[in-house]
Image (tube, rainbow, N blue to C red):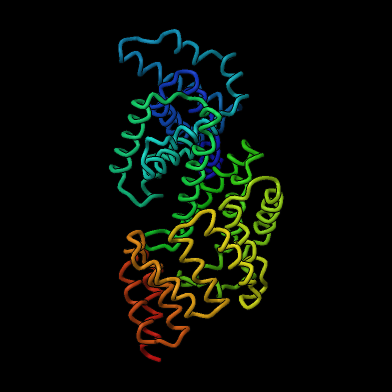
Length: 405
């Protein structure tokens, strides 16, 4: 079996094994370490020895033995629990139960910072090693190791139990879970720094985890909305870069390169969600993505409808990034000056002070309005603000073209 296939299996089973151990013993930190040992053992053995007939049971047994070893070094404590960890009948019952959703809620505990939630989710639920999490988030392995360690300590200090939040707390906790998955996807779709525009491995992981939440929470419209948004957005991935790796803006993309199957799946999921419950921001964003995907050409895009959806999004989930996107739609419908006026309202917002996309959008609208000198300066400022090499190169080229023209 190939290493890639083994990796897929490990990512599938890792959260279920961890959830089983954490539910049984309640010690998330030591259970997570034990599962990591089991994953490393499987990564070494399975490619050469073959995948066991019951991969979940194999991982559960190895992780259980790692726990026993740990407890023995601590003074031979918890003998009875360690024996239960290796009880085949107990394992069989555990294998039939999927506690991945509970694990997601735990990793997105409100006492953790957003970076810690991201790192812990990728490691514990995504099954990534510390090195893989570091690579995914473009942070040093030592930093990620400390971040994960502190996160586990905070969970223990908070007295968090391995169980679903009480019903009154679930909506807010679910909002945090979805936000973490959204952040993972966004970092993969447009990386914040580095030589590559996108990280397909990271977007794939975000989609996989969101599919899991969708399967476990079939009645949650916003879970469906987020999954639809990811699919409808990721469908354009192949057309977002040219042969040289450079950024290709939406209007210039070859739409025949878009993933039609992914678009259809996203549309179906969104269609089922809309009208079946409260409409939230992820459903609105998915509807906007669907309108882009349904357009045969850039000229066919239904910008008035997109603007109307952004008006709704502004009311239910206001924020500077929503305003930025709405300014683009407003400019398409009412002209670049209208868009520039709306952008001006963000100049005093500290959250956008170092956001290169504000200057990039401003540059584009200034160019469309005919103010070439101001557009050139905005393109240069935007390029200086981004740590993404492809975006920086694109912005510099746009500025150079104006200077030549």
